[in-house]
Image (cartoon, rainbow, N blue to C red):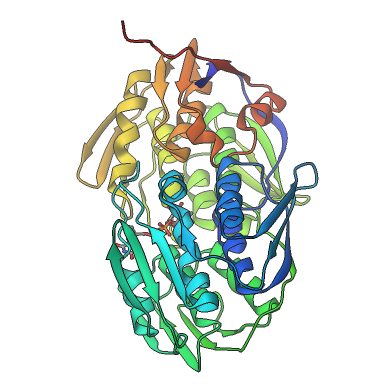
Length: 426
Ligand code: UD1
C-alpha cells in the first residue's frame, strides 16, 4: 500500500508537460480491434489504466508493445481476435466496456462483464445497449456478462441518445463504422476525446461526417486498416496543473496543454483571480494571493468537466467567500468532500449541490483517495495545508496520472511516495 506524504506551503513554479489523454487512449486502444494489423499510438501516458487495457487486449489475442520512454504503444490485432472481456479486468477498469462496440462490429459477437458499482456512482449502460440493439444486435445479460450478438453483422440505423454520454457515443461510433449502410447518431457527446477517436477512425478508413458536432453521420465500410495516431493532449491533466498553480499562488507553464479544450475552466480560474496567458506550446497560469469565490456547474463538453469538479471544491475551500458547486453528471463525486473536510474545509452537500465556505487555510491530516480525480484534488489541497498531509490509496491516482509526485517535485513541491504497512488484524 502506498501513500503520498506532502508538506504544504510551497508555491509551485516551473514547467510541466501533459501527455496524451487517458480518456482517449483507452478508447483508441479498443478501436485498434477494428482492423487487422498493427496500430501505433503516440504520446501514451504510463498509467495503470493503459496497462489494464493492454492486458484485456492481450487476452483477446492481440500483442501489445509499450515503449515507456517514447510513449509509443502498438497493438497488433490478429485476423480473428477473441470476444470476451473478463470480470477481473472490467471490475478494475470500467472503460473496458469500450471493447463492446468494436468486437461486435468486427467479430459480430462480444461478451463483456458488467462493470460493478464504481467509486463515482452507478453509471448506467442503457444507452450503450439500446444503441447497439438499434443497430441490430441482440444483447442480453447472462451470468453477469453482457452478451451481444449480430450473426449477420450490424445494420445502420438512426439513434438518438437521451443524454450525450461519452462512453455510449464512443461504443456506437465504433460499432457503426463497420455496419451495413448509414447510421445517424444524434445528441452525441462532443468531448475532445470523442473527436480524437473519430479522427483516428477516419484515418483508418471510416466514413464519419459531423465530427465535433452533436450529430454524427456514419456510412459503414467493408473494412478498416491500421494507422499511427498521436493521442490528443490530456485536458484533465492540463486542468489539474492549472488548478495546482491557482491554488498555491504559483506560476506554472503547462506544455502540451490545449487551452482551447479548457476554455470554461480557464475562464473560471480567471474569475477566481488567476492570470491565464498563452505560452509556447501551451499556456501559463499565475495564481492569486487568495482565490475569489466563483460558482460552477458541471455539464457535458464544452461545459465545465465533472472530472475537474473536485479541484474546484478544493480551490473554493480556501477562497475568500462562499461558492456553490453543482454536479450534474456524477453525484457520488461529492464523496470526497468528507475527506477534504478532514483538512478543515467547510463544505455542505445537499443533493447535487455543494456549498463551500472558504477558510483562510487548511491543516494537514491523513486522508484517502476514493478515485483518480478526488485523489489528485486531495494532493493539491495538501500542498496548501499547514503541516503534513498523507494521501492514502494512491493506486487510484496512478490510474490516471503518470508520476504525479515526480512532476510536483519538479515544480518545487515537497511530496514523497511512501509505503504504508497494511494493518494486520490480531
Ligand atoms: C467518461 C470519462 C469520465 C468522465 C465522463 C463524463 C472515460 C474513461 N471516462 O465516462 O472520466 O467523467 O465521461 O465526461 O472516458 N449514463 C447513463 N446510461 C448510459 C451511459 C451513461 O445513464 O448508458 C449516465 C451516467 O450514469 C452519467 C452520465 O450519463 O450520469 C455521463 O456518463 P458518460 O458520459 O457515459 O461517462 P463515461 O463515458 O462513463
